[in-house]
Image (cartoon, rainbow, N blue to C red; front, top):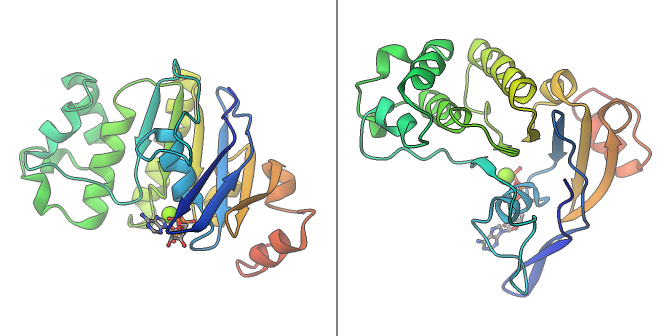
Length: 219
Ligand SMILES: Nc1ncnc2c1ncn2[C@@H]1O[C@H](COP(=O)(O)OP(=O)(O)OP(=O)(O)O)[C@@H](O)[C@H]1O
Ligand SMILES: [Mg+2]
């Protein structure tokens, strides 16, 4: 599927200017870049929770999107009820709670969950239902290492089983390298480099990408 070129301006400052991007079904595309480079804004425009400059759309209207925002939201109900909000059904909710090791929190009020627990609940919620484009904005940033690895496996299985395209925003370069087939690098609101993850995340063409990766001990 192809996204539609879009831009976003806040208070006269254009924080994002993105061209159309091809996202392939059944593949994970990592989105990397420094703080404030426009990754979450891009995600929010695609998810339809923020309108682009001039209104309109950033995806064809028929595309079914699943979205986990950077700040996971907990509604004032139990963890299980939060997950069931997706409409994925109780069986799937139980399976995901079990897999993410939050089964024991099923009856707890979700607003009292820890940061990592809230993220796991939000991930279970978004993985409960199939979609065509799954947008995950730093899904494991607040999780411990074991939970992050478990989550990676679940995301990969979901991608494989549903055949959806996954846009994975992450500051964990090793995670991006483990999971992604494709990659996008944002720099100061611009899509600076895109292509196979093997190239963008290991031997980028742009000096800015190279410099960014160097901080992670990568390039
Ligand atoms: N609602 C808003 N009002 C004003 N400025 C905003 C708003 N949302 C985002 N911005 C600005 O847009 C820029 C891009 O923000 P964005 O959240 O997309 O960055 P990011 O790449 O996701 O960063 P991070 O890695 O810190 O999550 C930032 O400079 C931010 O301050
Ligand atoms: Mg962000």
